[in-house]
Length: 263
Image (cartoon, rainbow, N blue to C red):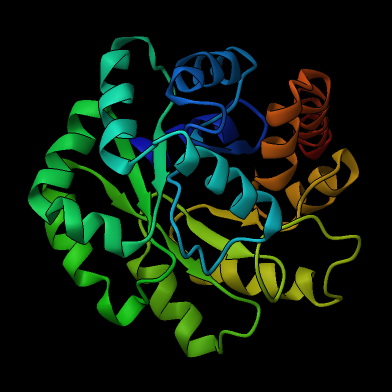
């Protein structure tokens, strides 16, 4: 069992589900990365998804795209983020999952990138523009360093593809809860319960819900469907505004649904 999967299953063993916040690394400057990560882990998150700013973020909605633009304007790069993480690695107690696109990884060099991830304490990688059929290049480069390649599965994936994605994913299966890009949503599809039931039956590892989850009520609803939730745009907005009350409320909502799910 990998470090990332173990963290999620330890949360389940403790009677609750996983909560993974997404942050845009360097939104506000590189100096914000350390206090943000240490604060989030102090609040009891299961893992942290560390987004890398990119000029063409095809999976991201306007909130995360704008955060990436702010980080890029501050001179943030993949290399600088990994170097910053490495500088306080001993203080990081939760698994880090890097979310980036393939071009920066390719430019870095796969082996150099893998070694930099090890130095930074990274335990998982999400690359949304690399489909399942082309993801072996990432597994070959990262798996020898015990770094998971997390796969995304969409609402429109047919059953046979869901089975293949579930078998290939490592750490957890990232279940996209909307059709389209990231960002807050008022409503979700009506078939989510059936979709998650099928996913969990097909997957030997945890299934986490992500995309569009932005309120405490949605955290509770989505947390009841899978093994945990990933919250992105709402966290990014709150951190940008210095609004820790909202961050704490989202985490508290997750703890609430975790508690209720065990009764």
